[in-house]
View (tube, chains in turn cyan, blue):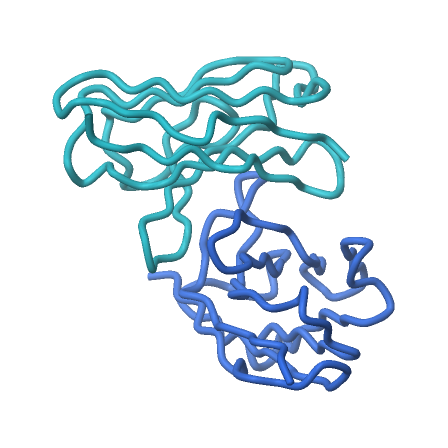
Length: 110
Length: 117
């Protein structure tokens, strides 16, 4: 299985930039497609898709969210961070079965 | 608006069975693959099973193979997860998800399953 590694937590100030990383144990890219995706989960809620195929904003997601990366290293950026963004963020790969998730990064206020 | 509404969870004893349902609306159910993802209390997300749009193909994580069965009724726009021989490690919130954009683009609110004596 492809293992995805995320830092457990990140502290950030409101209005600043947050950069959340995800590293895969092997490449999750096929040709020009980077099969890494990002979800946001607030306490007591279901996960919500933010970014698909590494850099594409899902429907209804604010433009302060962006994604980048290829191969094994990917980044989710939130700029500027707002109070409503305090949540846990998960990366997920669909390059190989089984689909796997990172352990999640909890975004906290500094 | 896409809606996925799970039901059927609760408390069950180890070794017993439980069947989850997911009622879908707001899209053409028969056009999409569907999946179940679970989350143990205070833990991360774990894919459980996937079924193709027409039900002809199914896939399972190793730890549930032979115990869980994913199925669907396209006429009723409903997804199911039959869980047999339940173990304490199956305790989790189970989410019904739609496969789209090469990922899981919509999620239900989740249903809690607690396996305990």
